[in-house]
Length: 449
Image (cartoon, rainbow, N blue to C red; front, top):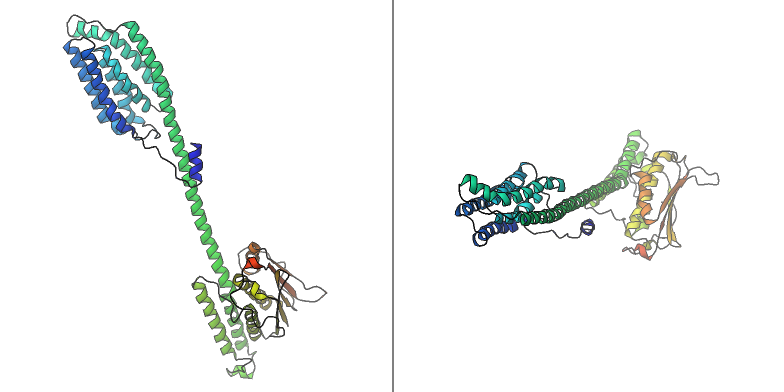
């Protein structure tokens, strides 16, 4: 049973017992009833009335089995035994008929071969079985010794035939009682073992179903969190830029050219900036709907960082310096997207909290790692803000970096300078996978965007 339970826990198929007990009894019960009549007819000389009585009792036994016992029988050895009113025919009617049959001759003792096992099969416990077995064995033994004489003498008014030998019948019944108890206990143990086995297997199956449900729910939750992060890191950033541009236009903070809705090629007007930002947000949304993270724009990560800095400058008016050095193409596409998302989040925090006058973005790939730094000269982000663990912003970036061995730190730049320094480190190597995009021409360039 333990092997079956362990196999079920590992997902292996478990062999089920397919011995149909009902079919076995369908053949045994009529065969034993006919054998009892043949034994009485050819071995034991009795009056014809005794043979008729034995035949009637045997027929009643087969009928009770077919009508009241067979339907309640389990089809497999390992199934739990029937109980309640379904057990009454086997535990009450069959023993009574067997005792009555023994009154017509000792040959009826053969009926114990089917009556006692059926009693045990419907009892469930050794104690309940013995409550019926012992009176049945004693009753059949007594009836076999004295029954034929009493029926002939007082019922049929015939010369009474000789009943069974008391010593022979007694020895036989003692043997039957001992053997029946031993075999019945084995049958009961087998049934209890089967019930316990089925219970444990059902618990394992239920545990596997619960585990599968938990995995599905965890996968759905992880997917929802991933989509929320993508929305926060892409579309939400563009929408924030549109809000900032709209506030500038409403507050009259633009120049004369912007107020006329125009602008130069280097510094287009606010309407054009809003349109450009909205188109980028639409592109990000389409990529997200396609269940694929938005790829870096242009020829690679370096160009994407330059474009990010340029858009930040146009939206906020702050100068942004972007510097990229080293073999960026060794990052691989997934890590390029991750670095870009970290830069977006860092610059969004600068916009919200820093009140800075300048931003420096640096990406350096060397010595088996990539280091992204975002430095501003403002008052800095509120470093003591609690980490809500909601999966957005900097906590979300940390969660993304942790599985690949990366880390994110935020703190003052040091040397007494004002502002905030955000640093992202993640490993780079052959195992990271080469980028399918060729090395960007912007790699190694520096200066204000």
